[in-house]
Length: 189
Image (cartoon, rainbow, N blue to C red; front, side, top):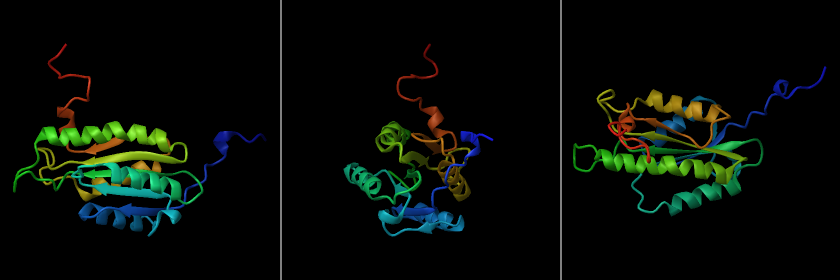
């Protein structure tokens, strides 16, 4: 019987991850990966996946990009792994008790959305690159994004081998209010 490509399973990348970042979401990611049977690496040389958690306050993205390139160069050899950029805007506050302006949120989120496909092309085919954006509460999610949703999005991004160059926004529909660049507003014809 001939060996068809569809009958040959793709090798499962080892579940070894490196989590960079601080705060509640970085801790959640570490707990989620451990609960899924992952081993957390202390160094890129033994990891197949990097989850980089940022709050978007960096004035200069150069250190983040340098860290991604370093991971790509030092990542453990073997089957395809990846990078997940996790933008956590949920704790960002302009003034005590007030969420950041929607324009500032949209600007940071859209910047990440534009960068991810370019990063995916840069690191393909060995590494997939995707992002998850977490925004503050919305009318649909007044308490913010549930931890279970963050964990589910991370699982999906890692477990979907055809997914690369994409960003998932966990925002209760907030980014739907700001059209992507070039599309204008809903009242334009």
